[in-house]
Length: 314
Length: 308
Image 1 (cartoon, one colour):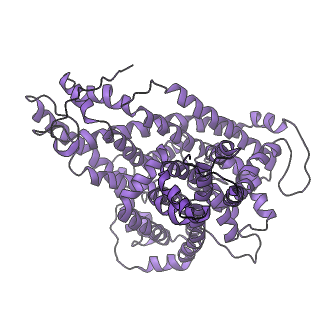
Image 2 (image 1 turned 180 degrees about the horizontal axis):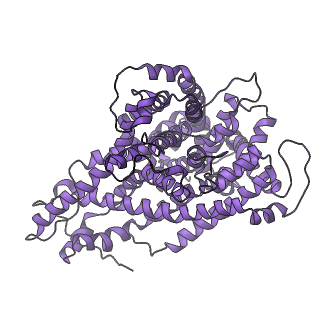
């Protein structure tokens, strides 16, 4: 007999166990997903029960929508910088934590207190984005009461009469938001990479050592290739996070559902929400949802392909 | 690309700390010392960057509003807790309660329904099994924004906007893909012998699931449980669309995350920032306590959740 139970009369059991989860999932996840595609071809306002089929009009309008195009551009910028900065910092710290210690008689090891570092670094991960939004809203305050301006003033780098308007400065706002995402994510990916590093068998290092490899060489020639799977996964996850950004942008920047000043921090999700809940253009918002889906799909495939390496077994 | 040659079979030398192998003797110690200082420096700077804003925010709860606006680096002049009690009265207590009410139902329900589906899909072959599995799992790939507009009207049609039960069901549904995915791989690894023994003893399928399989899957349940608790506790987008008062007489049932953002707007007008800071600090404390008590499981749970 195979590991699975066989026999008659299981049909009822199988159905019984699947029916509720499936019903919920279909009602609240799958059906709305499917409906989005349908609505994206209509001029539905969301309020009135009537709407009419408009074909690809919404998509054509999207292409001409300056605000949406700007948002798309910001998402793409974030898409490049968020994963790159976060992963590089996380790799750097993970290597420090695991191999930065003094080499005694026995060998190179992690720094003292590496456990403590991991605890501290990881903590932002369990905080909600809403907490981050309030916290960094205060840090980036545009007067001497903001932590950043307070520090820079004290150091004499900023004129107290003209503090930096972090979140109101068109050229700065997006980078300020990016730093919040990095601050939030580094610890998590550090722990992830760290776990992967520790699962690498010691005898591989032994071999590298016998061949006379230095620490940097060990990292680039041994550790990094063996971590590649985790790096790849991380890139996809961070990319998906960079496509979203709704919570931070909508709560930290000015404007209805954020995006200010003057659309300089606009992302697709905020444009979507504004069109849906504020302008009452549900069909149009659905078209944006579809564009976001397509881009997310492309992103995942491209990331996985572009970072493809020969898988190394150990 | 780099090829890695398997090391010869000789066992590795005894190495304390379990880190990386030693560099060659002569230049080793001094080189290691420099790196040690160097790495501690960088690590400490980042640790400060994490901790400092959090402590600064908590200290803000004890300042006066003008002190907060005046200078970021001022030390609180008095150590009263009145901002905390005002924050509690402003609704933080209620937001906590609302979030707890939802999670008390949504997390166990997620675990139960998710495990049931995963169990059947993992251990009972039937036509369409694979298709159904991929169907369940594929939901994790789509951005939630894609579904938001129709979801709102679906919940509205069911007359469940701004109700706990509505949000509970939506949370359970959106946690389903990942829970099924994770538990599926877990149930597959459980030994078959136990299952067969239970069958011979005459236990029914349902009974086997609840009394044999579920207890055996406990480590997996804990990992997914942590993931779901954190995910649902921190959820912002779903409640901000589904949990708005629908009319003047409809009471507000904001979740904690929503409530904090609400408080931020409100305190911006009322210029009572200590209340906002106290509110955020209050919202952070349970997370800090839970995290410090379970940090090992949380780190392991979340990282394995990502990699699986």
